[in-house]
Image 1 (cartoon, rainbow, N blue to C red):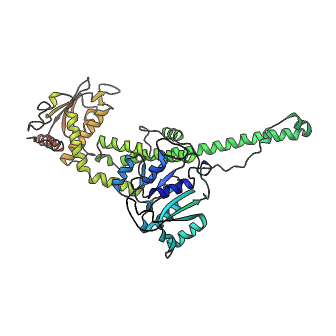
Image 2: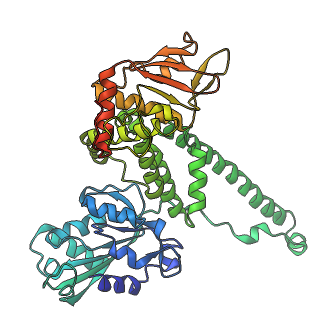
Image 3: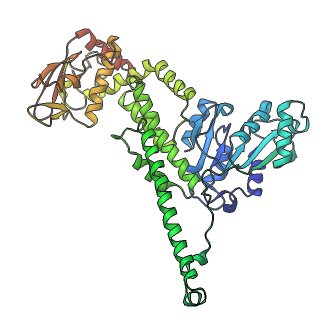
Length: 472
């Protein structure tokens, strides 16, 4: 299945810098487990291979998406036929379902701004053009490419078929290259002046020389104005999706400029970086983080950092929201385990019995718990705040877990950080679930107000760790 398409790819010279630049941007729709990309991408970038960072995949099956993630490819969408690209591609390599391969190839042609497509199809799709889609496809092929019929090439493939196979490759000239600066060349001679020209033509030669230089000076100023306007527009619109506490627009721009050789690859790198931050900020604004513990958030952010993430559209945002909501029980049960582990890490006084008696029915977190290095002095006066380190995540997760177990709304409860940072409190106070005391050395003491909630937490955490004991 892979060899015929790979042969066509190399035969078509898709890595020719004259045609696609030094860093071709490649999409594989219906990527499966990434067999095609594996043949042309590698960690060591050479003239006959694509950079892995420049390869993009679309796959409907969640399990195969995970496989692609594991191989280091950006999975940018799930349904190719609904795909409206953020990125700009040079090459689309396709092995679509035979049942509607014509639709897939037509959509690829539609979204490709300019470049090449290599596509495996059932030969009948080309030979028997009885539908409008097939007739349209035939016209596109006649005008922009060619077909090679290669017989029964999949008889020994992983997914066997006896159908005769055709490989279609198309080349599309961009109507207008949005990354190419269109200018009127200035003759280089205009920038040269020598004594002979001055003697022969006098003032005219000098004026030509000065006119050329002054023209470039004026054009530079005008271009810089456009640059400033464009930068201001980028800053204006991006501010709604970039949280400066995390990353700045300057950070993303510098990251993009360093990551790609060509303007197109730099653009795609910027989209990846910007989209990563936008995903996080959109979820924050939608308040989805109430279903995400600090670990889930870190995993999510790391995934975005490594993979770029799915395209930013309503369908994918909704799918992620529903996934978080539908799995919130499992997420919170795991959070119980994580909070349990945090509470039993620091002091022996935090747990009822010594390490090793995990099946003992007395193994549980004490009703009073001490968290070290959890608070610090505020900016002024005798005020305190939760430290900006891992403990802030721990404290937030404690409140999330307790809100989940008690059935209360995390958004409306008085959280631990609220109590500690309340100017009216002096080294002690109360949150929704705990009586609190804190000390200059940074320790925070928590005591459950509700004995039943304390017992439920221990019970759920022990069940999550598959221990035999109970909280009773």
